[in-house]
Image 1 (cartoon, rainbow, N blue to C red):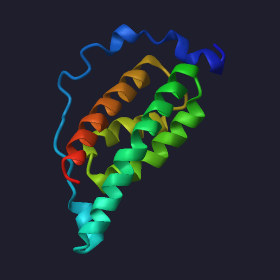
Image 2: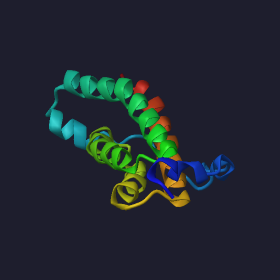
Image 3: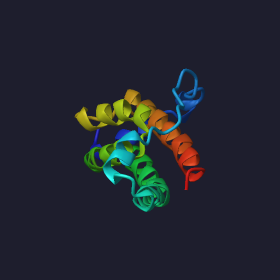
Length: 131
């Protein structure tokens, strides 16, 4: 199978029911607040940046998965991981770590990506309430 067609085998019906058993906890801002050392404007700035930029990253990740561009997908997962730590969306981290560490796209990674996206989107909605 060529790299360009790796995403073609993923069946979208496999992502139905992905929210079952998914942990949608509130973002834990402990790390970010410790870094901010009491500077609430810094906390708001970081959250605002994440809320505004992350949806584009998630869209790009999905596009990379569907087009079979695993290297770019791995890069995007790698760059998103520290951001998730800062804003406390910790439940998505294991999914992105798995995507980052895999050598080749497969159906399991597509499912993990969709779970991560769902968790992050819920986290973004919670973060919006905090700014």
